[in-house]
Image (cartoon, rainbow, N blue to C red; front, top):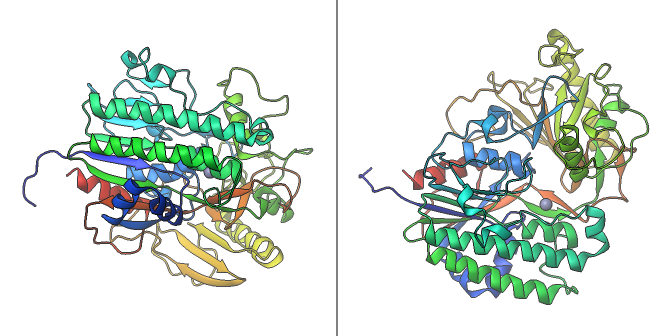
Length: 479
Ligand SMILES: [Zn+2]
């Protein structure tokens, strides 16, 4: 390759939006329409991951969840029921996308996993502990940064009681974020610039995944904001000089058909024991409870026992302490583990068959399972590979041993979950009274399909890419 001068990269993440929704927006917003028709759009396939933390970990590190051990916002530490919240410090974000240096050359606005550092230009996403929302320190007292808030601080119950009010709050937060981004892109020297919006994710959760199509009481307010939002993004792109521009979304939403409690599935086969008297909890509440247990919240959110302690680890052979991730309670991984390593493959087979029987046969749902264990034939696989099993309308659709493209040999991380599962259109839950609840659930749930739109660039890959491939494409634009 010919020697190139140092390049710049601007990534705008519209997390929560699907490629279809991007096309719908492009048909109504001129600037976006021009951008979309001048670029190449690819589907981002993130299966089995639906959490922003796990997907962003793959994008930022270039390593799959089974290589980095990051399958969600946290992972169990010394015991199956003790969660450790993950940050970029646990993940060795050492590529060229996020560089810690002084003065900072990387801008991270509202990115999950990235913790406060004076060596980054950093605007918090509000998911990690700490009072600071803006770095470096000299920005904190200046507008528009002094007024920056990562997210509206309302409980989900308050939000559901006043949806119109909550939509307006989300819009205000997003507008301020865009004003901060514009100020930074113009007046702060940078090499890589990540701006992640939250408004599409919030809208899908507040209104449902059809928030762009339906005639709603907030539609006028919403479309007025979308015009403003994309004109600010247009100003951002125009101010980005010669930077490579990429518009991405790391996941989208789909209508939710119910809540499925993975630990109850395991419990029904005698593999897991949950504490008695559990009340249903949304994932947000579970996350808050985890922060609460670590004394990271100002006031405890409830008098109930912390949700992370609900699996009785002394007698559980397996459990799901975070979304979609199942761990065997092995004695070589956990200090109080009860599964001796020689038994692990047998217990894994029982977990695999419990999932298949409950979810595919009884509930008649589609299911994706990824496992590092040899759980069912055909079991021909190279060592250190993760197998992917997919059931579609009751039939096993595929079993593949090369989930991630690329000739290089990939090594399993010691903290990797034994299983990752995805049930399309179903919200997974790790506690709560019933195994499956078709009545009480959010209106939409995450769908592991996002997109990447490279502007003004010929992209050789066709069709769908993985987050790890997106990492390689972003890195190559900086080479
Ligand atoms: Zn969401």
